[in-house]
Amino acid sequence: MKKIELSDERCDALVAHLQSLFSSSFEETLSDFRASEILDLMLRTLGPTVYNQAVADVRAHLEGKLDDLDGEVHAEEN
Image (cartoon, rainbow, N blue to C red; front, side):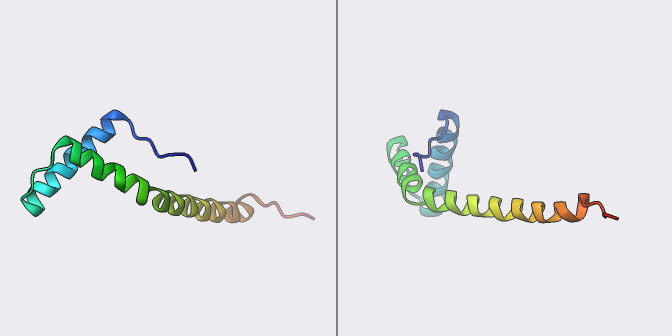
């Protein structure tokens, strides 16, 4: 699996979210650097697990749709 890369805008939004979370939940101020490091750690450690689960979920969903396809478009043969 290739490295998970986020756009600058998404990274900025997630860093701001982490800073807000730490401020409100833990009364701790995170610098941009610290929040970015936490985000990077989360992406490296949790990213592959979340990615693999998402792929498995999509696969199961698509397999269900393909199974339904037989019933939806199957024509009776004489």
